[in-house]
Image 1: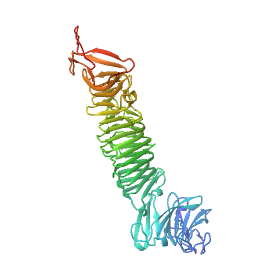
Image 2: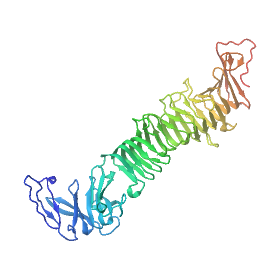
Image 3: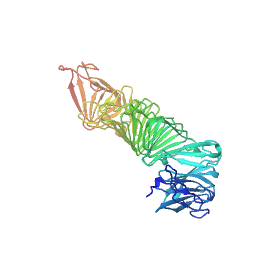
Image 4: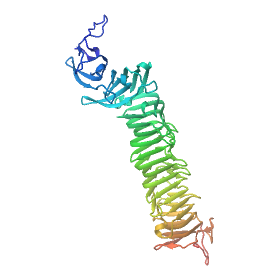
Length: 541
């Protein structure tokens, strides 16, 4: 029995007998066809190609078509003919070259149309995928190309006959599904004729040892595909659509875009600059993981629409940059002064297992939504935290808080501000300024029970329904139109108000104090102080 890989089948208008070489060689089997235009007939066929299943493809040149033959019981038979004279998609003018890749896609050198056409194959017929080229001598232009070949790595080579050159192209869909190919340098070009979209699907992987460049207005499309190694550089107005992974260092222009179309992992976990992004990223309702040895740097705008943004080593939101939306950021969050975090729905931020789970010097806008912040101890709020939208209240909640915790869950540092209307859930230490919208309960910043509020900052238009422990053992707090509905703790260390061990707490209010429900006043001794008979203490003015 003859093995198919050990024979040569000659296809021509007339039979040609081959004698075996003295030291072995091909053995004649049969000839097929004759001159004509019917099925299985040929007019000056110029080339053949064979697929992995043994199908034979013939460039039937002067009949302006491609024919496929199949082998059965040691003989060839006609399977189908495709094409006609013309310049439209799926039409040919003197096709000289034909090639087939491992996925069964057919490439045709459409010679007198000065182009290459690609077809996918299904159900015994061809479907046009793309046409490449036009007449000329520039990149992506051809002059009577007569040969085409494709390898398993997705490289397409064209014999550009009258330009006296070979053009090299890359077609990732020629890589077998789940397969891998390598490149040192690769560019996705701006011009459609040079290929302005690079698509990797079906688990295909492109390994880059140097740089993959996405030129202006070009796009990298990962549809369950992967890129690894090197650097992915996204230039001005370039874009990536991704469901899959890019385990490469990512750098970009401020007008570049990343669109998650499914679960995605981006960046190089082995580099401190593994993810340093400048542009716009749209997470959508997907799960996106950012990988870097250090913090992942977010770009100008990051939008989440019900999805999750994760980063094992945390994220940085720089000055002038914003993250907006609803969903979750499952990472340590470091937000710079001039940055903005805005909730358009329920939003969770931070890392409950990290001591630096959430730290901000920027702005947090809750709108009329609930923002949950996770931190192992104190989440440090930024220069401005705004609750509500001016009409409805917002809510700020410490995600992993326990009323029995002895530490604060939120820290508002000196010079920082919380404004607006809404509710706070969690122990709160205020060294800055908390200012509600107005004196009506619905306009105030309300600290819910059973949480403890402490610190030496100012309070205006607030209502504390839990425990208020002013100062810092002891201390003086100032405010306007404060309200209390729970317990007020006053520490007595002496007869004068102040901040030393020999002083006592004092609450100063320049407006009207609201007592909601039945608040209680609890006097706590401090520094072993025992008042004398007749001592007086002004604890609320």
